Image (tube, rainbow, N blue to C red; front, side):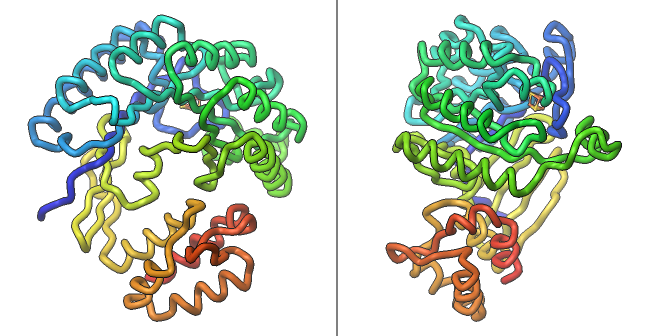
Length: 369
Ligand code: SF4
C-alpha cells in the first residue's frame, strides 16, 4: 500500500516533574537526573534516525515536541534531540518547529539554545496566572514563574503560545478573565483555552467521587469560553479553532494538520501516527493499528474536523460530499435550523452555539458514514 507522505512530526516526551491532579496524559513523574530519561531519549534518537533512513521525514512541514514536559528533560538531552532532527530532516526556518515548555523548567539559557537549534515556536503550559487556581490544579509552578517564563520566551521567540484552562471548580469568572488579560498583556501570539475535564483514575476523579470537589459546571465552562472569545477578539486575536486563538499569521500549522486530514508521524511512547491512502485512513499507536477508516468514514471525519475550525467547509466541498452522502443537504439544513452551523461567505461554519455544543455537531456529521 502506498501511503501519502507525512507532513507533520510529533515527538513525545512522557516525563514531568510531578503529576498534575487532573492529568491522564501519557506522562509520569520522574526526577530530571533519572537514567530512564537518558535511555528514552537515546531510543527516540534511534527512532528519528530510522524514520529518516526510511524516507519518512522528507516532506515534513511541521514538528511538534510535546509531552509530558519537554523542558523537564533539560537542555543537554533536548540538544541531542534537536541536533538529531537537524541531521535527519531539513529543519529550515519555513518548517514550524514547536516545543512545549512548563514555567518551572524553562530558563533563559534553554530559550536561547533551543531557538538556535531550530525551534521557532514555544508553547508554554501556563493554565492560569492565579496562584490559587494553580494550586487547585496541582501545578508545580506559580503565577510569577508563569509570567517570567513568557517574558523569557520573548527574548528569542516571536511565536509564543500559552495554554489556559477554564471551568475549574473554585475558579471565578474574574480569575479566568484576568488570566486571559495577562496573556494578552504579555504579548503572546497564540492562546489555547481548554475546559477542565475529569478523567478516570486521576486525583480529581477521586475528589469528585468522594464529594470533596464539585463536578465542573457546563454553564460556568460556557461562560468562560465566551469570556475568552470576547477578550481575545477585542485584543486582535481570531478564533480559528474551537479552543485556539491566534494573532493573524500565528495559527498553529501543526495542530491545523490534525484538523485537516494531513498524515502525521508520531514517535515516542504513546504517540499516535495517522497514515492514509485515497480511500483508507489508519491510526497507529505503539505499533498497534487502533482504527481503520474507509473512504466514506474518512470523508465524514473530514467534515467533522472542518467544523472544529472557523473556516468550516465550502459549498463546493459540501456538494462533492453529497455525492457520497445523499442525506447531507438535509443534515446541514437541520444543523442550521438548530443554530449549530451557519452559511457565511459561501462556507458552512460553526456558530457560537456550534462551538459550545461541539459534541452534538460533530456526532451528527460523523453519523453520516
Ligand atoms: S505537566 Fe502536563 S503532562 Fe505533565 S502532569 Fe501536568 S498536565 Fe500532565
